[in-house]
Amino acid sequence: MSDPGVYRDYWRRKRLLDQGPPRFPLRRWWESEGLCDIEQVCFEAVRGAASLLDVGAGDLRIRRKLQAAGYTGEYHTQDVGREYDHTYASLAEVDRHYDAIMCLDVLEHLPLEEGLATLDRLVKLLNPGGRLVIQTPNARCIRSPLAWDMTHVHLYNLDDLWAYLTAAGLDSQGFRVAFGRPPRSPVAWVRFALATFVTSRVLGADFADNVVLIARRPPSAAG
Image (cartoon, rainbow, N blue to C red):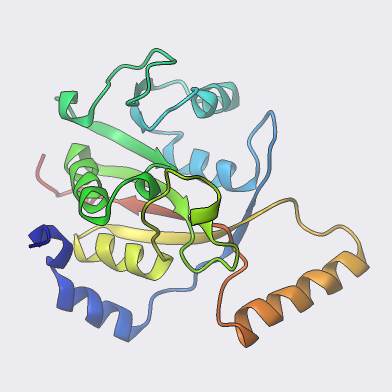
């Protein structure tokens, strides 16, 4: 039988989705030395946190970017890889709470039950009023994220992730993230508009490659 966490608050989540999720604005990601568009959004969410845990910190690129942008709080990292030095090798080792937690490009590498258990664990590690930043590929993307990396095993759509965290009592806002800079010429804008129309209205898919959720734990939440 599946982990009961998969079906916890199932009908509450269904009701939230039936009522309609909020609008999820489109933001952009591109390779850059400094913070790109969506990275700036994430930075604004965590910049005032006194302590931050970066889950799946990998090659520490995000730590370098955030600190270069002015983050001065306590910065800890977790990753199962051994190529770089991290504060923790496993979430099971974390024995304290944080004012902010970032989990970027991790959930898609885990089976559904393990992914949702990871979300639950991260919420519990947040201090009251703390913020959780989640980034993962968009299950609705016309370009299947399963083809990007052989270690991708499960995909999430933004509506479901929003409903899951909202049902858990967090105040959540989401963003759809397209790869690449915005079109810069009228011709490019027309091509983009046509591609968007065909993808969303004709095929019923999405052109946005990733999704980002920024969720805030209520200030009155128990530690």
